[in-house]
Image (cartoon, rainbow, N blue to C red; front, side, top):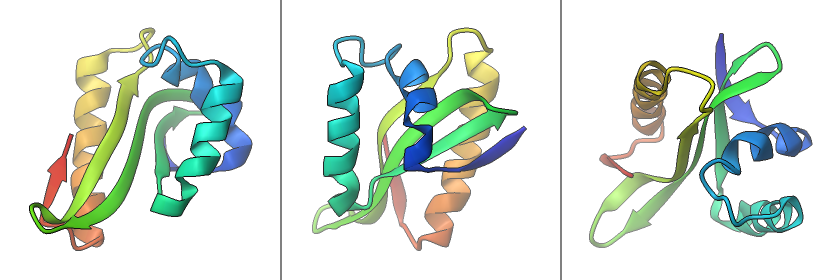
Length: 109
């Protein structure tokens, strides 16, 4: 098992899991939106077993007057084939560490 940032070459793999959360989204629209979100430093983070994506989180580090510097989690899904309780917890622990590395004060889901 590996947790890492995913790159744009892996969009098909990401889409196969994300479409379980965003059912109305076509692949073409998904791809367009991912490219549009690059300006806000949107990062795709995944838990993988080999080439298979188990859990996906789409995040960015943001700063606002209200929340100060924080990690914003926009998308969070575990593939329905896997134990969501187990893998959600693993991803949340990783995002906590990721937020601390990014000097964030909080995580907003």
